[in-house]
Amino acid sequence: QECSRFCLWDVVGILCLLSVAAALDFKYHHTEELEAYLKGVHAAYPSLTHLHSIGRSVEGRDLWVLALGRFPTHHKIGIPEFKYVANMHGDETVGREILLHLIDFLVTSYRRDPVITRLLNNTRIHIMPTMNPDGFEATKVPDCYYTRGRYNKNGEDLNRNFPDAFENNNASIQPETQAVMNWIKNETFVLSANLHGGALVASYTFDNVTGSLKGYSRSPDDDVFIHLAKTYSFNHASMYKGMGCDRQTFPEGITNGYSWYQLEGGMQDYNYVWGQCFEITLELSCCKYPPADQLEKFWRDNKAALIEYIKQVHLGVKGQVTDRNGNPIPNVIVEAKGRPHVCPYRTNEHGEYFLLLLPGTYVINATVPGFKSMLKTVEIPDNTGNFSALKQDFSFSEVSIRSRAASCPKTPLYQDLELASAATKPTLHILVLMTVMLVAFK
Image (cartoon, rainbow, N blue to C red; front, top):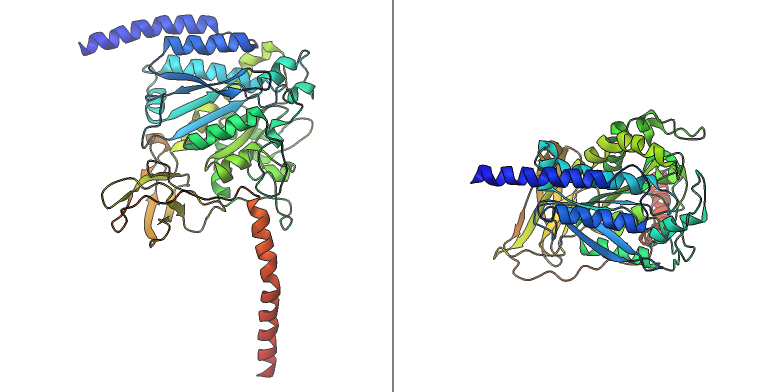
């Protein structure tokens, strides 16, 4: 019977493979074709995929997301959530198409390729081929450079439209942006990438900066971000060479976002600060909207990098925090000592936490508000090849209540931090002066 089931699955799978492969070629897929393809994949692989719209664009087009994995319809404890988002700028089109081919590759490789099978069994992968369908449809004449299709129907740049962690950008939040913000809030995303065009580089947070920093805006997890950017760059056919476009050079094919240019209201900073999700921005083509006959090469150039990057969701440590009765405790602050986030990372409704960390020794601090913190020293290996981060649970024997809801300021956090820092400077100056006077007196 077991053999019969697998043989039957293989026959059905081969038929599905042929039908899906026949339906997807290397061309640009407009709204109706994109929707038809996604619905066809879900119909062919209903147990492996979950297709849903997270909202609508200004003109009413669905913002489709296809989730893939062993449990595609819902979060499963211990399985991290990953996402790819493309076509945020409507005239940057390569990402839109290669994500369709990534979907095709994942579903047709499941149970045939052992690596892809393990990846899908241990990861829930969310793919949004287009965040700005209106902008894509508005780009009537493809161009390698800027077109009005970059913006949404209201003329807003969606990658300047998120709340900013450094200053009040007073953005009028667009429907597409709000849909993604709600999506981030409702899922436990751990790792993400945002696919763009117009350059060839992997860019990482922060994109904006406080007034006190010059030239480089470093996050508490800068080492992890550099690793993530290099993972993509070095698995790409040419990004790692650092040649860029139009005489731009990016050593090893990566850059700190702010070092490249300052950006307010970007999506990758929002993910990291408020979404507890590490996101990088992938610039995949010098030409924003290249001819369709180049799409197959773009897919070949990016295929390995797309897969290797997903595996990085299994970096670091994960676990569950429970009370004395074994019940999960949400909203517990869990962070690695020495790298606190301005908006502390907290457990989800299942008491789960996920921390992306490079291999090494760390002290993990779990804090239930109002109770004593619990510290555990962990030795983190590189578990990406095993598709599971190190597991480290916490149990608070003295706690038998649900933690209060997490509170995180919605105003720019780093601005407040800088003001607090400035307020302490006179005190420090006085202390230094008193010390000098004391030494002189002696």
